[in-house]
Length: 136
Image (cartoon, rainbow, N blue to C red; front, side, top):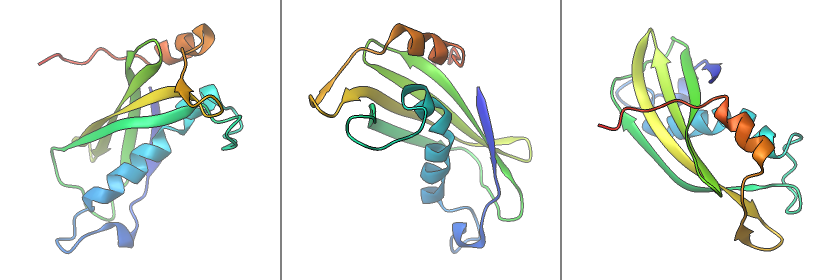
């Protein structure tokens, strides 16, 4: 698991003074950086260097978040396939799970324009952050 702490900004709140639901996507994206670095350590976005594309994201909002309290983003690997993997994210505030979501990431060759198998050494690194999710 990787964990980052986010301090919500004033501009992150909506008209009801809750953290806006669009902000969570940005926080979860930020939390993916350690996983991205497994594939591209310097995070170079040149086509010959960058190795990943996003295939799918989803979010479940289970509790409200407010301004003035830090949010902990926890990130895990919940599935590793041959050419893709799924990251599972949680956003916690004051010890309460507020948002959970998944992101399917594909190992991709931008020069050849096709998905490619995840190398074994990176697969092993991903496995260090694996979590078994409840199937229900």
